[in-house]
Image (tube, rainbow over all chains, first blue to last red; front, side, top):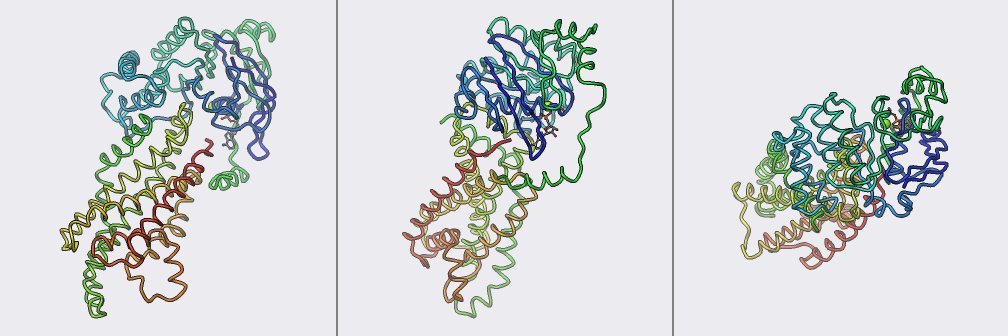
Length: 261
Length: 248
Ligand SMILES: Nc1ncnc2c1ncn2[C@@H]1O[C@H](COP(=O)(O)OP(=O)(O)OP(=O)(O)O)[C@@H](O)[C@H]1O
Ligand SMILES: [Mg+2]
């Protein structure tokens, strides 16, 4: 369903993604794990037509996101890591707008919005503007919105960021259900190893823009001789913290970003 | 169509919900209208140019449409900053539709703003010479709104953050305003200024508007319409191209 070969993305000299290859089968739940700044979000942005790769090739359902962006966009749904709601609009309006953008017929749109808002306990607040929501409520709305249409492939970039255990549990139960009943292929990232172990059939671990290991949770534990996925992760990626240094070159980059090429 | 409509509606809703901003944005045009209208009035009259309020009102209406349309395009920068832009960019919809919906929405809110200023002008004592010319005046307001909302979209797509916007304000929008003849007649200007006013699209908008309100036009209504129409098409194409190239 997704095939990535020697994918590279450079921002100036920094290679955020540095020669990544992997395959995701149709109907699979695939977890993409890695420390902060490893290149997970950048990879997802290239898969979802938001960034053009520097090198390498991608196919989604047999289509290239660079040459056929619109066809690719018809095939996936995404929950972003960063906020992407319109905070001036209400929860219901955000849902409705999404439904229109994804050509969900009105009747289904209304029905599904109600089901999802109830599921994520936002129904009572549906007519409040998003700017009045707490961080967790916004996050739940992002997820509910992402699930409004049923895509072939669902990208979840740290969907459980900032969510309480109840909501996390709810989300993964729902995702597993979607995967089993509708055959939706799921590509997810998370920093919670237990979540990855619980839902993912296969896992790729990325560090400094390169894939350091791939396999089922069992295989990764076996490879590293670890008891848990968390240990396996630490064994593969080391235990130092990845800091994002904001030095002179970083500032230059920000200046250059002001005017797009 | 549904996509264009919902994005248009989004802009209009946001405008109608931001009452404090609407009121704040009336401040500048009001100042021009009252301070200049009454302050320069006597000199203008002595120079044999008639009533300055009658003269400056169309200019102030054009100005408020110019500013609100450009600002609406810059709303793109906010949407980028707060992340909503991504949501529209990954949707299975041609970017052109997204751009058109946003731009028409921005033009509509600018038009509402301009209409509000027109009403204020009428209250302040401005009198169109002939009410049958109002539809023509309205057409010019629509054209000004579209021209600059499209330009705003082009600028908003090209800029990455708010810092660049200050430059655009100082080196593009303010000159467009000051060279448009909103505040002074276009006759008997020094050569360089004449040239500059002739390449300023707003000059044709304000001239058309003034022509419709007062019956006296510098370029002629047909020229104004033709030029504004052409510029609108060019800027829409530019905005669409610029928008289609956005990466996050
Ligand atoms: N627009 C950009 N310009 C320059 N560098 C960027 C840009 N986006 C990302 N990077 C850099 O690319 C690297 C990978 O970033 P990315 O966001 O893909 O990491 P991630 O794996 O998603 O991390 P996290 O777990 O923190 O979300 C980082 O070093 C980051 O600084
Ligand atoms: Mg990330």
